[in-house]
Length: 275
Image (tube, rainbow, N blue to C red; front, side, top):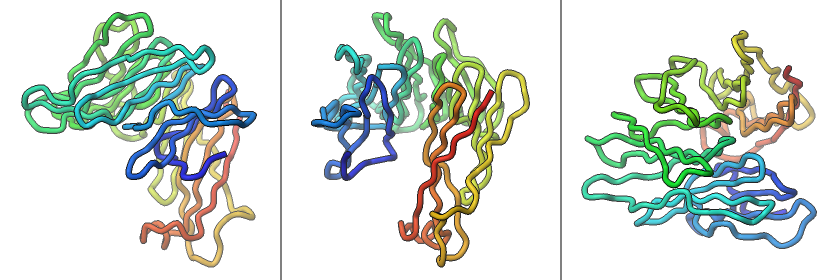
């Protein structure tokens, strides 16, 4: 399909298209391509943060030295708009966008404080709102956003997980109240959790008020690297298809991980039915 893929920025499908990031010099470019093949369409020549997609709508942040800009587009109809645009700096306060997420009712992103003495911001804008809403995040230069179908879901340093769903006037604390387990995303009543160590990642699913249910990790298989010593297991990505959970794993020799090399790396996709 394409060379120079930039997996750290995401990969998604919608409206019979694949959306992906490409390495472009020292930056990244956001593109879409029909699943059946054909020419690539450039959505952004300067992608500034991991993008997100839900339903037929993709949202992303443009990289710009003077402006913070978030856009969205309906891949089926071609319609779209600018959700947010403002100078990166106002006086002595400067902000950067670290991540964009898409909920059912709108788009969410963070404005992380570049300096000290002023709060970061979580920004939420519904598809029908005339302007965005802001929530202050004091003493946290990079609030961690997780995907949520209902609105903003983020970890606030020293306070735990917060949710700010569309329809709620202000953010409130939510489970889990600490950094463990770590939330990857919340879709309806389902929560995807990541645990373990950097060399032995684990995944679990919590539904409603039930206990987390561990998802079996990949075992030794024909693609497992051999001849390099102990092998580490890392999570590369996930996707839901109804009640089916697809997980992408990287199997990396520990010696390659510790030396920051890609020697002997293999990939595995597992699938599990979650009710």
